[in-house]
Each structure stands twice: as C-alpha cells, then as structure tokens.
Image (spheres, helix red, strand yellow):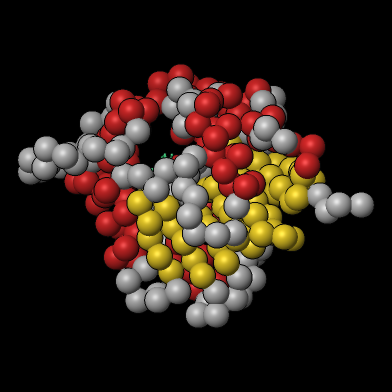
Amino acid sequence: MPQIEATHTPLPADYYDGVPDYLVDVYDWAYVNPQHVRLLDRPSVVKTLLFGQDGRLMRRYLDRIRPGSRVWQVAHVYGDLIERAADRVGPQGTFHLTDVAPAQLERAEAKLASTPWARVLRADAAQFGSEGRYDLVCSFFLLHEVPEEIKRAVVDNMLAHLADGGEAVFVDYHRPARWQPIGWLLRGINAWLEPFAHALWLKEIRDYASQADDYHWEKTTLFGGVYQCVIARRKTAP
Ligand SMILES: C[S@@+](CC[C@H](N)C(=O)[O-])C[C@H]1O[C@@H](n2cnc3c(N)ncnc32)[C@H](O)[C@@H]1O
C-alpha cells in the first residue's frame, strides 16, 4: 500500500463500524483514513488517476442527467463530480449520494451543503433501499473496487431502483486493447493495489445482473478500451 505523509490524530474506537471489510483491508489508505482522504480529494488527483480522461468519463454520466430528475449516485468520488451532478439535477429534482466511509460522507456533506435538493446518506450501495425509485442511478468507478459478490449485489440493487424509463449508468475500467500501453501499467497496478479490478477485464457488467435479459444494455469503450460506459434500461412489456 502506498505511504502517504500525514500527521496522526487517534480515530474514535467506533470509527470503522459499518465500513465493509474489503474497504478497510484493501483501501483504508485511499478512502477510509480521514487524513489521507483530505489529501487525496482534489480534481488533480482524479485527473492523474484517470490518465487525463476524467472530463470525458464524467461527461458520460453528467450529459445524461436531466434537470428536475431524481438521481442516485451510489458512492462518493474525489474532486468536483458530485457538485456538478447535483447542479445539473437542479432545484426541481433530487440528488442522493450514498457512501459507507465516514470521511467520504463528511467530504460529500461539505461539498453539497449549499444544495438543498441534494442529500448525503450513509448506506451500502449493495443494500440501500428506502428512498424510492430514480430516473438515473450511477456507479462511477465503484465496481472495480468491490469483491465479486458485492459487484452482483450493487448491480442488482441499482437496477431495482430504476423508475419507469430510468437508466443505470456504469462508468468503470475495461479490458484495454492489445496496442494500448497503459494496459500493461494497469495490469501491474491491479496486481499490486486493486485485487477486484481485473474481473472487469474478463466479464461484462451485464454478467453481474441476476435478470440481465430484462434490460437493454449499451456499452461503449474509451481510451483504447481502458474504460467503459454501460447504460442499462428496463425493457418495456410488449
Ligand atoms: C466510487 S469509488 C472510486 C472513485 C474514484 N476512484 C475516485 O476518484 O474517487 C470510491 C468510493 O466508493 C465508496 N464505497 C466502497 N464500497 C462501497 C459500497 N459498498 N457502497 C457505497 N460506497 C462504497 C468508498 O467509500 C469511496 O468513497
């Protein structure tokens, strides 16, 4: 795990309560430790991690948000994505953001404090379930960071929350084309730091859905196959 310089203040004893084991075991340094989170939560970090493709990838999600719609983003993302998504929803709509890590919830609440139509909720994307249905549900780079059984539960839960005519948007990693040199770099990064990511090189996101045939699936890839955007819409009865 990378070493990040930070001063240490003891965390409360119950700080890790409710944080899934995989997040503590694999991603504590990146998403749970509050001092690290403060250092990492900036657009320049997202741009670097996404090889400068952040703008294109975010637009795949943001361009689908209609003003006045109900949107659920299943996990916090560093930088300014959640403010931009909530701005697009606008005051006639609803923007719900869920996350499981206290430091992420704190960051999200600060970013959305002046956006009354936005709510930040502590909930696992695999289990969240009491706020009704949504016109758009988005997972932005969550699936590659969770174990296989959680990928299945998150995909199913997102689809279960679609309103009539609604769509689920998944933006995440994908198997790079052979000619894409970044593929070799990512192979190393996955082996070192991202144990759940390689599965997205081998399987389609639709393979994680229990009732995939009930949905239309549309996949596009970007940046020589490094990334994918998948849109799922429920088929209407004939
Ligand atoms: C969306 S992913 C990765 C995003 C991207 N790499 C970035 O730049 O922020 C990271 C977030 O997912 C959250 N997370 C992990 N497992 C989750 C789950 N089961 N439900 C909701 N949030 C989860 C983490 O706490 C973290 O805030």
